[in-house]
Image (cartoon, rainbow, N blue to C red; front, side, top):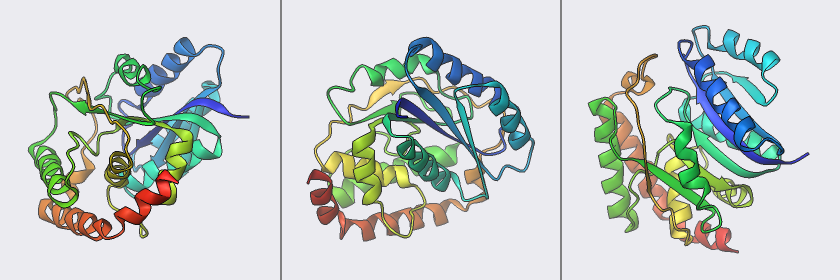
Length: 247
């Protein structure tokens, strides 16, 4: 079996909104692609609340839901494992979003309608409703990517992206080892450098109404320094990786 589209969604301590978000996206898939194989892949990243219980219950009730329960490995690790599952399912397209109910499914078509023009399409949070620490990290990373790689990406780590499955496999094959803190940034850089038009499409970003932001557990400067070191080290490998992706 192959899938036309798989949606990858990491989840951590989202008991207050996970049911709403799952039903939103699974119903969206059923309505938009009624005759095609599609699935929502939710990766429960070792949640400490009732997220796992709710997801296990939902999996029994929702036909186009796939749940992966894993030990806590962080958002980036959960995303990577979701991508691997989507590729294992032979997904023609892979879309990634988050489970915190800050995005709207209505914006999906803005990316989907561009799929014939690029194999890697990004949204960007036109008005971003996040804590100051996250806004700072986004600006820091944007400047770092521009300086280190000589390329501009509006929102390189955004969890609202559409990727052609065959192209995602090429990108995953070139993902740095050990796995970086924010793998979506590296996928974005490789896609841009390999010649894809990312489009940077403006999308809606809502206030977070439930749950907690895991990034606040990290010291801001530790996050920035780690990301900067990983991006700087990756610069030395990038040309070889881009050639492999283009091959």
